[in-house]
Image 1: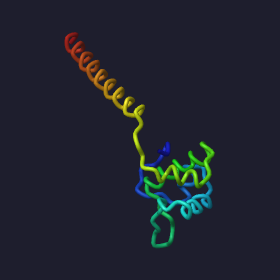
Image 2: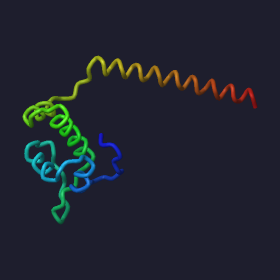
Image 3: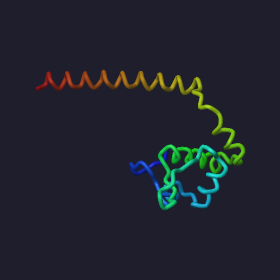
Length: 117
């Protein structure tokens, strides 16, 4: 997801361009290349990108500029359904264990604080 993203429903192409560090022409070109990118248009014809499009554009930027994939390669990656790997499932279990531990520590700290008062 885009860091430091303002909390809005829609973003104009200039805002998206600044947030992602991409030229507006690149954004317009990617709209033609990726059917998943379909920003709404205002009554004046201004492109309005939802958070879903911002997330997709961030992913595309990472694939094209970070992973150095071609647009065809990026298209294939994006077209694949997102599947969790075993490592991601294991990480999720660890996160849940850590949350439980932190809750137990918090409760113990509250109990100790009450005893000291």
